[in-house]
Length: 256
Length: 202
Image (cartoon, rainbow over all chains, first blue to last red; front, side):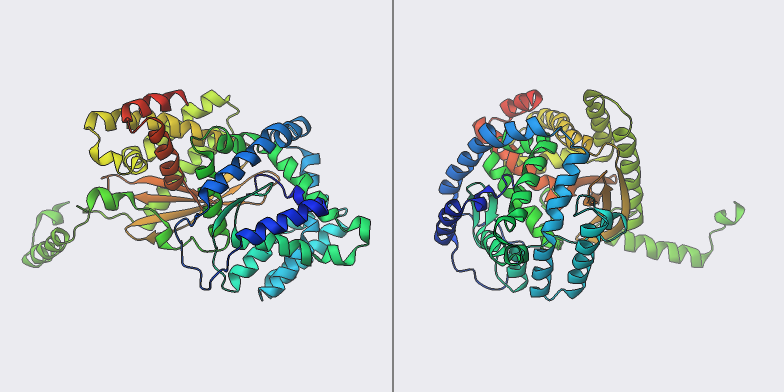
């Protein structure tokens, strides 16, 4: 869950700053991801500063805008925005599926893009989902995982929120290799990014109480968002369905 | 049931053999099965489904969730687990107070999340053994969203079949609450009594 959308990529200068920041943090990721590695956060002090900055952006800009525009729970317009953005990310998903050599998923995501772009009115309606073609989101961070790169270190990136060095690298590569970015003429090519940012605002508004509970009602919002991000991400990458990921509270109680 | 009273020598021998096996195994006489775990979660899910579609106000829903939690979840074990090492040095009185405060806190916290499932349904799909307990897999189907994964961990180690963990799209309640309760305990300088008092205000 990205708490703050990647607005950064809309402005070339911000994007360059972002690249530099990333280059600083993205260390060499080794191979063979250890199953359910513990939290690797050597830059915690710095990450906490970025987390506070992101919270400031959220409380002064993102949250007020989102809550003014989007009712809690959303509505048909919100759903349309999210569907539209999700459809525009499909070509990138297909490309990543091919790089991951998951051809079945590549076919499914292609079919989904074809259905929603046509009878789904340019992706505003998720007709494919109703037809049982739900598709599967992916990204270059997942491709790196499939290729054997480890998660790397935990990062709280400016305007991006919780991520890891591998996943942040993935986000940047995704922008660079996005088929829309390459196929479309200059003014239109950023449509996917703009739609993605709009979907981020919508999601901040429709899940307002969930996000607020993490950012403003938890005792340590940094530690809470870190564990939520890592557990959810590892789950999506199929890393945490193993037995070792789970806690057996009875072991401590009854083992003695 | 006359035949039951006639204890033949062979039956006695068989019964004796089974009895000694049961004594030798360090587990409850009637071990939990995947099927029983699934039946328990079927009940929990039916209760949750009726709450999220009851049309009640938030306060009423949270009270209902607390009843579900108290009935089907092993709250004392969950409370001990989220306290971590502090639970080992706590007095029984402190633990009891904390467990009570934690039950209301966790019901409100997860009740608010489950409330976002209004109009949706949860469907139990599968159950499988993990280590010494069972994982029951369910899917939450919400309006206008892709279904998401909801898992329940069930054990009978407390003497009764109850769930002790909920995993929502990989996010583990025990792990998230260990982080949260740990941070709150630090804020209260390790004082479990003060922590319990603070939980009641959240």
